[in-house]
Structures are given as structure tokens and as C-alpha cells.
Image (cartoon, rainbow, N blue to C red; front, side):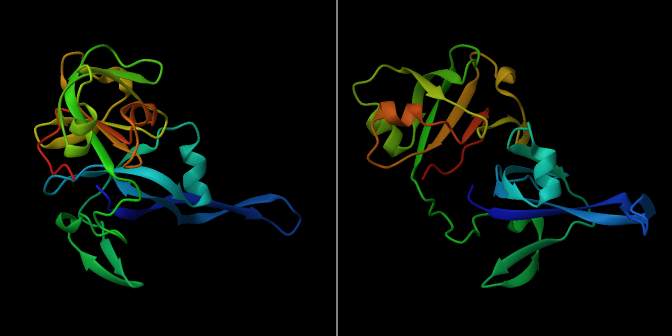
Length: 216
């Protein structure tokens, strides 16, 4: 999913400022903006109450909240949430269902996708996933020619882990992956990389029970 987005949350807090004598004075309640920037981590089901976002930036307030937190976050949305699509600097109000590949270069990521699908061999630990590979996209399957089906993949702090219940995604931690379950490992790496180089690159997304999607 390559939908680059800005998630803006207005939160009511007590305004605090400096008085004439330098003392701290609390004012009336008002809204302050928390801006989170990133990419949509999973296509939301119809009328979803939340969006899963791989956060890559934001304003100072938002980034302070992200200290020590994983980049994958779930943001609540509702009837009053407004979705804007920006084209050449011009915003247009759209529906939640329009959240798809509308980034600056839709479907054209900086690095190609390597998708490996299979079953989890052992609990995820120490930044490593052991997977019994059974399928994948053309690039991944070509790299697997002549290789053992059991392969180890790397994950890091920016890897987003998602568990699908039906067609509803939810964020999980690596330790919540279930041994023996079907998982998908998505990695962005150079097209001329060897299998070893790809496996040493931290995965972007790891999905458990992921619905069938395109693999390009």
C-alpha cells in the first residue's frame, strides 16, 4: 500500500503560557494539532472505525508521542473525520473508500517489492523470522530457485505487524505471531539483490492471515 497520508488530530488540552511575571498561567481549553505523516499500512474495510498507518514523520507534538513506540499505529476515525486528497496542491474531499494508491507515484515505490508467503516455523525473536516459504511474487520466487524452503527474514523497529481477522486488520507485536499460521513478508529492496541481501533487509510489513491481494 503506497498511499502517503497526513493524519491530523485536534486534541482538547488546557492552554499553558507565560504570564507577565514569567509565571506559568493556564488559559481556557482549546484544540492543538497532532500531525502524523506516513503511509497507509492496510486497506481499511468499509466504514472502518480506524486506520492503520506506518508513521514516518509529523509535527513536534506527534513525534514526542512516538518516542519509544513502533511506527505502526492505529488511528480512530468517525463520522466527523474528513478525508482530503491532494493533487498538485489542491485538496479534494473524498470518502474513506478512496484511500488507495493515490500517492505521488502510485504503485511506483522507490524500491521493488519482494513478497514471500508461507508458514511461521518458530516464534519471532531477536529481529528474526523463520518462514517455510511456499509462495510469493515473481521476484521472490525467482530468488528462491534452488534454495531451501525454510528461510530467515529480518525485522526491525519500523516493521509493521498486522493480523487479519477476516478482512479486518489489527496491529500486533512480533510476539503475537502464531507458529504454524500463514504469514506474508513484504520487503522493499533493490531489484538486483541476492536472496541473502533481501533477507538481511528489515521487512516493511509482516501480515498474518492476510487476504489475497496483488503482488506487484
